[in-house]
Length: 206
Image 1 (tube, one colour):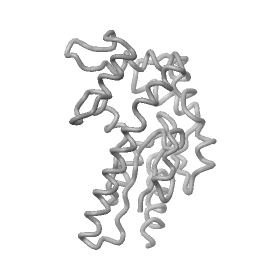
Image 2 (tube, one colour; image 1 turned 90 degrees about the vertical axis):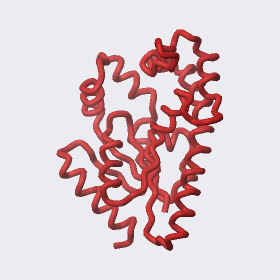
Image 3 (cartoon, one colour; image 1 turned 90 degrees about the horizontal axis):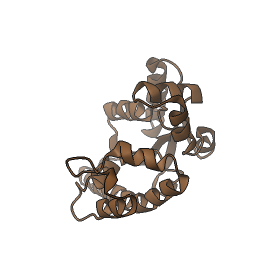
């Protein structure tokens, strides 16, 4: 089974992914794939070249890699530039995810593992129209107030900058319309973990 795990920025999606991983799920991390592509760490990709050509060498740091903060500062101030970046990134990210799913399915077949669960941890499953890749969709939900507080706690963003990044994504309530499961991550982690374990049992038909 392939399960999508998504949510808004700073909703706690990555924390939930760790919980599912601890329970035995195989995790495909779309953010890691994106980071590898941006820094030309995946053999044969030309994403790095396309991004530098589009945004200029001013986004490079002293080591010659893309400064993600500089790139983020540009795209989150201009929706059209964010859309351009997504058009470059999304097709390649989806291609790599498909390859990883195929690899996991092959491994599960070899082991005759009927309870194998692969979770795609990705912020833009709905926006990137990647729902067709998954059998079930989990949305991690959090209030905008919590998103802003968490985002500012882990970065140097101002409140307006944090709001701008949240507004750049589809609202969580809209993502919930596509969800098979919704995890409320507004409370203590113990409460979130209870929800994760309940969903895991359903996914594994236990």
